[in-house]
Amino acid sequence: MSEANFYEFYQNNSEGFFLAKMPQTMWIEASSEEEACAIAEEHGVYFDGVDKGIDCPCCGDRWYRPDSPTTREEVEEQLAKLTGPEKTEFKIVEKKG
Image (tube, rainbow, N blue to C red):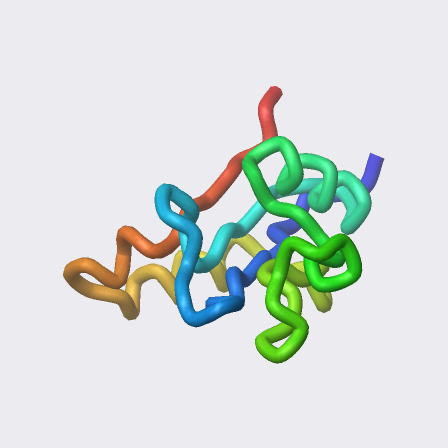
């Protein structure tokens, strides 16, 4: 089994708003991109919203698959730079077990 990394999922403000009760950025700890996407979907993330008629074609898809993994240290460094209400716009989902 490969070492777990974090995969970043960013919420685009399709149609000019962010989904309520969903973070703007979510980091998922997983061993692969496929695993991270499956976990993200369990937490309300969806993909290809424009093709499915959910998201605005002008604004683009609300959620995108991650580009590349990052480390726990890099995630913690990014969070450490945030203050006040900005911190509430993020969620970290750690691997169980």
